[in-house]
Image (cartoon, rainbow, N blue to C red; front, side, top):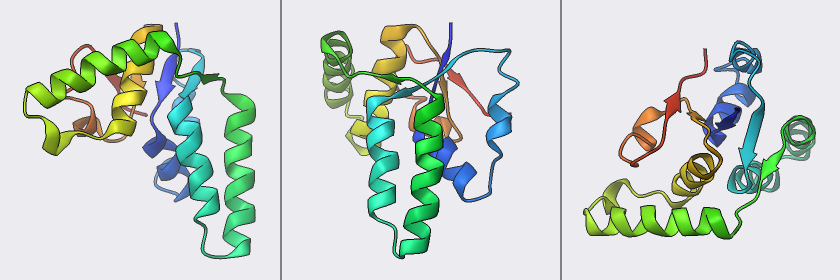
Length: 135
């Protein structure tokens, strides 16, 4: 089956709030990234305030990208995303709307995977998404 890991799990790991080993007890499930997660992680590299932080962060991110396949934002995911986005706008969920989290959720839903996240409140309002906490 597999799991799609939210960007905040990797940020928590980089900042020492979570060990990436916390993902290992997911009963051997393959770990995937949504394409937007890759973009967010790489943006974090570019936003580093010092060269030392940039080098360390790039190594951290490249290690993740080398070990977890990236699921594309393809036409099927775009269709699911468009439905979720329209529902959010119609249901007055705009104050909670984060288009990056919505892309992660749409990717996970299309592939039949739950989302592993440190912040379930970011996703709880999205219909059809299954959530897991890192252990």
